[in-house]
Image (cartoon, rainbow, N blue to C red; front, top):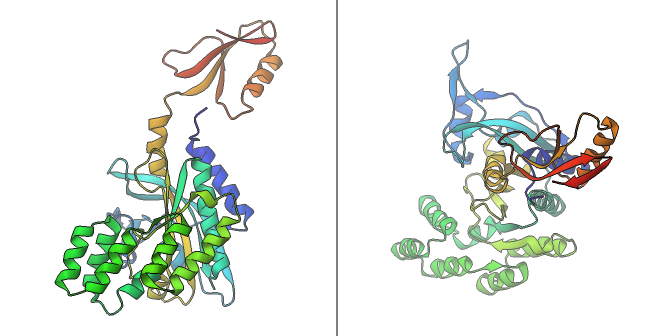
Amino acid sequence: MSMIHSIERISFALRSLYRSHGYLRYKMNKFEEYDFYVRNKDFLVSDSVITFTDTNGRLMALKPDVTLSIVKNTRDVPGCVQKVYYNENVYRVSGSTHSFREIVQLGLECIGDIDDYSIFEVLSLAAQSLKAISEDSVLNLSHLGVFDEVLRGVDAELRRQIMLCVRDKNAHELSRLCDGAGLTVQKERLLGLLGCYGTPEEALSKAEALLGDLPAIRQLSRLAQAFAATPLSPMLRIDFSVVGDINYYNGVLFKGFVEGVPQSVLSGGQYDRLMHKMGRKSGAIGFAVYTDLLEQMESAEEVYDVDTVLIYDEQADIAAVFAAVAQLQKDGARVIAQRTLPEKLRCRQTLRFENGEVRVL
């Protein structure tokens, strides 16, 4: 059976994982006022939103994102951390089809007095989520605090352009922008950060040699040390090209990748600045799993409708046939019992139940 599980199995596994850590299911409406998304469009994966006019004349939007709705509809609880997960339909342009789709979005949010444990728990759950999708997966970790230090005092628009170059690993354009603004020291450090990719030990050693003893680097080191005590440690990488909009994000950012998909299938980070922009005092960190990209991966990998077709005849004992199907399903295989082989059904193998035994056709 393929390493890549079905979307349904992944969804069930992730919901069970999040519940096991005390995350509560969060349910929400399918739409919000359009103006709400306009004010926060830079936070969205896509700024394309499906709108309609409500009966009272208000312009509404089908929900393109879950995190914004959770922030809007929760409240600050001093001294507490609210942990919620979601499994909701959102409506936006799919990365695989480039057209509007109803997409199942899975993820979680941790909101409140966030500390290193909260951050590590979310990172750990992100890594375990990737493992539930594929054994061949990597979690890339970054920290915006590094860039806050390097670009301190730099004009906001120039900083935005520089961060786009960092995201795209565009060293040539990055150098041009810095040279034009006379940012000689900053250019050297930024180009150096682009080369700080790899295992935490390797990348953080380079970053510390480049920038010195920064709080952001110390925090990444603490998180990496916590990962080192778990089986998830081999999947962690430091990659400072993982950045987000500085008006919304701060602190730790991360992206998850799996074999066979060129884009990140999981993305998350701290978004205290979004919280404060929306009038909240709490901090927050979370991530989302992009199931439309998983469907793209699944369609490329899964060339069979079922794993096994079990053929039986009219005289077969029905309880024995049912038991044979159950036995074949033990390792997660998809098995269908039929009296004849259906036309155009794609299967890995065809078996026959005969005289109480299963044999290969």
